[in-house]
Each structure stands twice: as C-alpha cells, then as structure tokens.
Image 1 (spheres, rainbow, N blue to C red):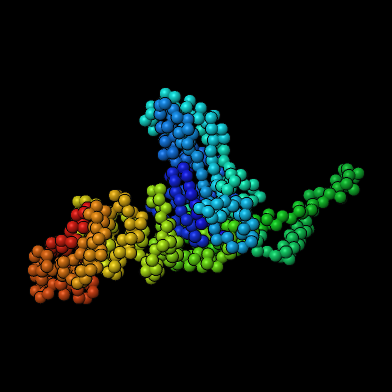
Image 2: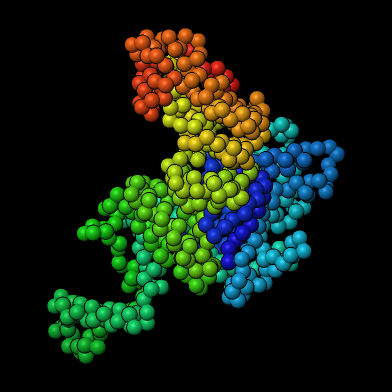
Length: 562
C-alpha cells in the first residue's frame, strides 16, 4: 500500500500542486522551490510521531500569498458578489489517495475512505483548514480592510485564523475521520536541520533507540530486564549510607516500631523509562562526541531500522537531504542502504527523500524523481530505459545542472567542454553563469526531452547544444528540429568535428601551426593524444600566448546565451 497521489491547495508556496508518488520518491528542486513545504503538507492529514511534532492548526503565514491577495481583491470589487467572495475564501486542502492495496489488513486500514473517481473505486482522505462560520469570517475581513487602498500589499497579514478550524475527512462522504482510524497511517521524518540528533540537550537519538529496543525485545527479554532492575535496586538498599536514612531516634523510643516499618521500594518499572537511560555510542565514545556526518549516518540507519518492518500501521518515512555532512564513502553506503531497504521493506512502508546530490539521485533510479518548478511537480516515471541505464553507469553526471541551470550548454566530450570554458573565461570583465556539461556521447535528444519536460515555456531557462556533424546529415536534421531560437539553440560543426572547425576558422590553422613549430595538419594534431593537445591549446589561449577565432557554431550559441 502506498500514497500514490497528492493534491495541495493554497498551502505556502503551492496555490495548486498535484503529483503522483511511488514506493520510493525523490524530490528535487532549486532552493525555495517548496521541497520542505511539500513534506510539511503531508504531515497535516497523517498521524505524526513525537520525533517531529507539528500542530495541525495553521497560522496566516501558512496560506499561499496569491490566494490571500485574490480574496481581498474580490472583497474590494463593486458591487460585491457574495457567491464570488465565498468561492475566493482561502481554504487549505491536502488530499491524499491510497493505492496498490493488496492485503486484507491494508484494506482494513483504508476501507472507510472509499470514494469513486472517474468511475473507479479509490481511497482518499483530506485535511481541510477553513472558516468555522463563513459569514463571521467575511464580516471580520471586511472590517479589517476598511480604509485600505485596493492595491495595498499588506493583506497577507490579515487572514484571521482564529476564525478557522481544521478537519480530516473522507472525501467520499465528507465525514470527519476519528483518531482510532487515523492512528494507523503515520508520517515520520528526519528534517534537514537535524544536527541536534545526538546533542546532549535534546537526545532525539535516545528516543529513537528506546522505540527500537521496545519493538525488538521479546517477552522473556523484557522480564529479564525487570528482574535486573529489581536486583539493581536491592543493591542500592544495601549501601550503608542508604540504611542511615531512617535511623531510630533514641530520644523517642516510642517511634522505633513505626520507623522500622518504613522502607524504600522501587517504583513500578516502566520499560520505556528504563531504556531511556541508554545513550547511543560509537566505538568508545558517546555519539554526540562524533562528527556530524557520523551522527547523520547512524540517525538514518536507526530510522529505517525502526520503521521499515513495522507491521502495526502504515509508515510514510521522509528524509530531507540524506547526504548532509556525509563523506563520499558514507554517501555511497547510505544510498545503497536506502535503495535496498525500500525494496525489501514490508508493504506498509513508503519513503520520500529530498536531495541536492546528483550521484544519490542517479543511483536511486531517475524514474522515482519528482522535480519541483514553480507550481509544477514533474514526474519522470515515463523516461526511457536509455537514460536510466546511462545515469546508473555515470552516477556523477550532474542531472541537476541540466534541469535547473538558467543557462546550460551540452557538448559531446571533454575537448568541447574544455574549449568552451576557456572561451568563457577569456571575458575578464563580466561574470557568466553558463554551465557546460559533457554528456560523453553523440545523442542529445533524450536530454533535450528531459529538459523540455521541466522547462518548456520558461523563458528564464535556456539551453544550447553544440554537436559534431560526423557526416550524419539525418542526425543533424533531427536535432535542429528542437531549435526555437528563443530558449533552445542547436548548432552543428561545418566540418567533421570541432577540431576541423577550429582549424578551418579564420587564421587559426596558421597561428596554431606557427606556435607548435610548423604542424602540417592542425585538426589531426588536436585530435591526437586524446584530450592532451586540446588541453595544452586551451592553456596557451587562456594565458594570452596566442589568440584564435572562435568557430561560428560555438560563437552563435554563446551570443544567444550571453
């Protein structure tokens, strides 16, 4: 069983966002794209554990600012339309749909949430935060804006949330879902700001360890712990200073019989209290004495250990930036652990992670990726096998640069990458923000299709493709179809490869030949020794020892982007 569909309305930066989820979902996006807000939205309809408590009552800043502005703009309209005002009231809704329900115990969890969508039975719940009394809310809002200009931008501070209340309902019948049903669907999270996991003043690690121990101990082991606890207490009582606490008083012998009956007995042993006195260590040190990376690694391992095999309820486990503070070796370890843990986990376990590290994203299967851009959530579930295999073989390929850079140039190999970066670095007076990425092959169409899926229609994002002709006119035509001369710019060499075009442009052949002592064929020289000769040429160009003319196909792309 998984949550396979999410719809968020009017929550923080999301005015309307819809997306699908899988058993393992990887959320990517630029800073401030809403990755953390997405996870916080999921906490509203689900039962939250005490590792990350969050109130389900919201405040004004939780509302999408555009929905607030739209509401107050509608209030200002003359004549006032009560139906239009009512429909513009900012209401936060988080809708979750459950799918892949196979076992009877899974159906027992969601059975009361049945609804019909597109003539199909579905199981759906919704968190809704709306005014308790619509008329009272509107009357108060009208009083608040009295005297404000219609264009006033401070309306975001005027949502009176004291008039609001929340409910978690079944969308099928609109009825509130009781806690004894909701407690079987939980969300557990490791936030990005988790450096206090094992700090001595908070000890979240102890709480997680206590839960894990309680779950793993069998009845015999629990009884043995209780016995050991009582033996420990008896040893305390045998200490001489402990016995002196209740001495007989010779001045009042009549009290001796009473004092003899006073004794200390252990409180009724609570297993959780006993176990909470255990602190995590690593090697010979307390965990809080270790570095942040080691603590983060252990936190994630414990987190998965506790939740992945839990059969008592459905667990949605969320980890923000699992790569935080991790070395290369530990990142490889935790990436593989997450992937295999999800594959081997019970049916009531689902995982969402957010990440900024391409190697983690590539290894966890790009089909699981959901990219946030504006109000869009783009799923890559339907990408072809070629890209999946490509990324698996090149885990360090920076897919995030391709998707999110404002200006990016794709080239076939390292020689093109070196040459273009050298040309960009020659401009000492201006900063450039162009990423040049070598894809290590000739075909660009798959990468263009991925880029378009996220960035089509966004005029702030631009991509250039610089490719070799390789005597393949058909491939040239297929690639140049993508060129729209606005955000996508495709250029192909006139000659066979870049090296041929460098040699045939202007006086380049003569200049390079003279510098390298009468080279007969400059193109062959640049192609030989793999990238070594091109690297040397780039070095002397950047040092100003020679000056060459940039080939036309490269210059045109740079002019479009710069």
